[in-house]
Amino acid sequence: MRKKVIVIGGGYAGLSAACSLAKAGHEVVLLEKNDTTGGRGRSFKDSGYTFDMGPSWYWMPDVFEDFFSKFGKKVSDYYQLKRLDPSYRVFFSDDSFLDVPADYEAFKNLLETLQPGCGPSLDQFIAEAKVKYVTSMSEFVWKPSLRISEFFKRDLIKESFRLQLFSSFSAHARKFFTDPKILQLLEFPVLFLGAKPQKTPAMYSMMNYADIVLGTWYPVGGMIQISNAMTKLAKDLGVQIYTSSEVEKITVEGKEVVDVIVNGERISADVVVAAADYHHVETKLLQADQRSYSDEYWASRTLSPSALIFYLGINKKVEGLQHHNLFFDESFETHAETIYDSGSWPSDPLFYVCCASKSDETVAPDGCENIFILIPVATGLTSTEDERKKYLDQCLHRIYQRTGEHISQNIAYVKSYAHEEFSSDYNSFRGNAYGLSNTLMQTAILKPKMKSKKVDNLFYAGQLTVPGPGVPPAIISGQIAAIEAEKYLNSKQKLNHGSRSERIIQ
Image (cartoon, rainbow, N blue to C red; front, side, top):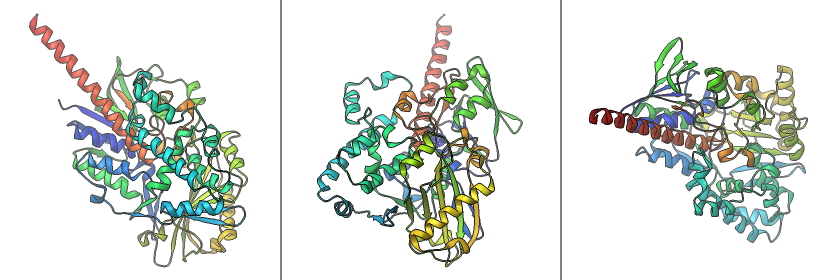
């Protein structure tokens, strides 16, 4: 039976949930507070430049293909992908850099120059990482993690040991490699998972398989192509999308949502999927007795980093940069401590530079470059314009040191973005950029639950619940939430049908 579903939030998770529930035959209304869909995956244009505002790495292409295939579509129906080669460039403290090749054998040869004889170790490391990736993507990542019994199957218990949930990534990598540059290459994806490598489960070496084997890709036209594709699919499926529509309150009677209030109007609902910030929904849209988690609970959570971002339009071509560039020319450990231990601004941060115009001439005027600089930083910080400028100057100076390009005099456009903007644009808890950390104590059933504990027809999706942070996990999260919402609707329909039958028999 067709039901009314409201999805709050038009990011990857919200669009994924909306598409899935519309395909199931329901009337779906998606409410987005900003003036466009996409969430963190939005873009903006200014002065002839087109900037992706958030995600810029396209990994795990199988997740995108799997999503669109469920609707009889292919990624190529919406946008074209190119595999980047080299995948990215890494700058080190000794003034050297490495270009990471897309070809596996070439990558192995590169590592052999750093640690002679390590080829067989790499093969074994990647073979184990592949097992983790395949197992996680086929079994664990699709669990709603509402109860521990989901993992009680004998095969899953056996696989959990193969996934190495209880050993650290740092220790695992050091069983295979000793060269510090190789270790930095392998550990860099972990920085964005929300914990130091010493506190991240070794299971996440699966991200090295995604990086090294599945590759780094780029959707021509920018990452905004993903959001545009999902939005078009949603509209084609009949989803009613309302932008500039921030939800003010979720009205609950008994243990069920009856409607949501948006722009002063009430919209009734049989089910609500909240793909907005989990903490915001709990603390601002629900009454205290309707919340699943206390303020103390949220205060005890470990968050993934926030970010200080700079969008730069450069009025000349810049040599010495690839599409993706990692500046690991300062201490990884010291920077990680400021994020996860002291919660302070770093003095000499690592940073990432995306120069998308190296692969796509449409994102910058002729003869110019589109540059995106991101510094991972602790959540809950505040910044002034002077502080932001200090970090921009520092990054530009280090780019000059490593490439010889003095681009500070060639900035035609600049915009910064940090905690304050994450909070105002996305109601982001403590201004986080990536969600909840993937530590052992915040994995699977230990994350905030996808189903409300207090409201029967309220479900959550996105980076503060399962499976975790990142674009592919967000897309999967929306699909899992849709499955759980559909189960609820089906069970309620059976219950109501049974009640009517009993009355007829009587």
